[in-house]
Length: 370
Image 1 (cartoon, rainbow, N blue to C red):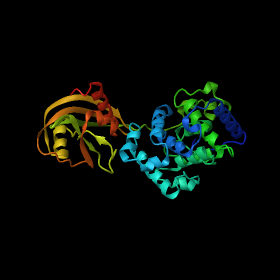
Image 2: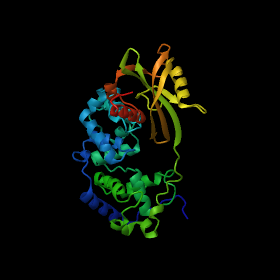
Image 3: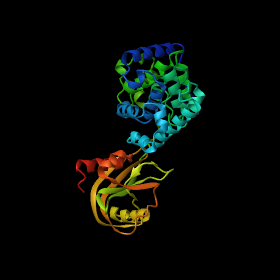
Image 4: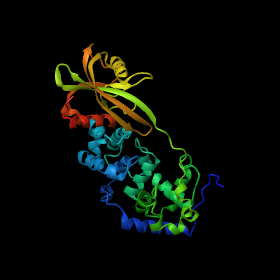
């Protein structure tokens, strides 16, 4: 019977776990760019990118970011569009904006050097306990614990902890701290994450070749597939949206884009105008209403371009994309912080939400043939 309490690692199992993981990491760690120097700036960028993204997905983003913005100063001085463009496709765009806010704090308060003190790291915009612990331990080898999904899964299986891990995270921080061998935080924290990503995986874990098999309670009890208990899966909310590519009536090579308002979802990104469909509306009806509300104009010659589905963390967007011309009215943008007419070939310079990017890719494939 589980009460929510988590037992500690025994004095017998603790050194086995520590030694086996460190030896495994030494032999099998992936060659990742930030591991070549453990430069604090690069560790910081990698950790922010990896919060909701797998390593293989993040690597090209990381390489492009470091090439474009090689220093903390370059991040602090960049314009927002550049920052968001480098982040395009990773989602959670507030993280990119917080990177720039933190870079400016580092320039102002720490003379451009990434701070080593844990409390100073934790005080930077966008940095919570996990990221602060990751930077302190990985960049500076300080004995700070970290807890992510890989580490939760590994610890839960080692201790056969079957309580809901979504609502009961605190014990994992305590056990992660207990596990760190003194002076080995950099390698050990990475070893736990790497081991969870490559061996102790969510599905089909490599138990047969696992060096921790002898001290894994879930393996011994036959409960590996039941641990960790993440509780009921959150269902994604479906959203129907209609958007339109409007050509400039004075220059057919230009189209209208607008910048999402501050403070809202994906604020600061550029988009094609449109909006959510209301109950009972067709996509064309929703488009006409939204364009009149947002821009004060009506449309004509409305033609379907493409239908795109894209899953975000909490919802799935079904995007109905159209081409149209302006029929009547003076363009008066009312729902954006900026707007402009741009050449098709210049769209690649602007940061867009992922579903809009898919539409732009389709336009590229068709050589902008509307």
